[in-house]
Length: 403
Image (cartoon, rainbow, N blue to C red; front, side, top):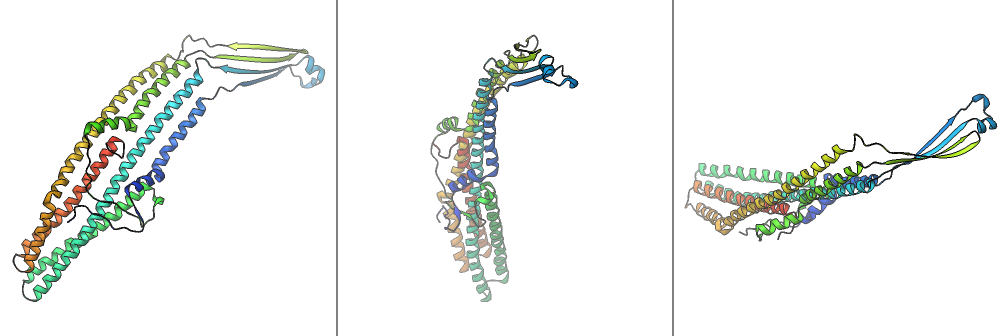
């Protein structure tokens, strides 16, 4: 038996790389998350706006009974003015920088969503491959055992075996028929769940997966993978950018504490005289100097720095755990491939041959059949666990290509 299981080509089949690309393009949860970047960029526009000027106007001493030109020119008073808030402390520049830093962090958080989505797609893809491989095994087992049942029926009618032995064989057929039905259901559900991740409308209902469901050795040491993870993980990059964003907020709060000046110019017409007046207003910072927000922003920097350290340690732990999981699953798969698969196959073949010739009892033959079925199924599950461990390591490193 060949340890790896290859799938036949079909009309609508996608590989793992194609599945990931479809998910990145069509997954609605990810598309919704990406709008956060656009929302943050819109916030940059708002942060960079200057204050609007204020238009002022008054009309005084208006008598409804004397609405003539002479009265309005000599007795009424009209004022028209414009006021403007002059921001000090580079507030606008500080607001813009703080908004840009938030946008940068948002990009990294969305990239981390992409990392999680790729892992979910890969996990579900392997589940679909396992379901396909299990289905093929169930079909092979059913076909093979059906031949045994047919031979048993001939031997029973010829008087070579008892009716009890024949019924035992026929009853075992139920297990293989049940396996087939359960495998078909598992494949349908796996493909349906994968389609949800890809974007339901991105593939047709009759699609399938393609690719080798086989052992793929992974080399490299944990130290190199941890180093690459520290360079690639978007969640760690977001934590680092969070420190930068916190410092920008601190600078912004200090700028807000600076006194702004309100300037105003008025044009006045009264008693046939035109005058221009200039006004200025400066708030007296006796009580509120924004000291509370400045202190809060300063503490937020410490918080962000601690979160960065925690994220860095989490990256190291994730890679270490994923690497150890991979090595363990690698050993399990290697055990099966070292000869146990061949032993189970050979034991079943010998028992089948001997039973058909009356050399072993039906119970011995059925026991060998069950052992072969259990070993083949366990190998596929171990192989799927190994492939999932590979994907877990890729997610922990933050890259599809491992060092």
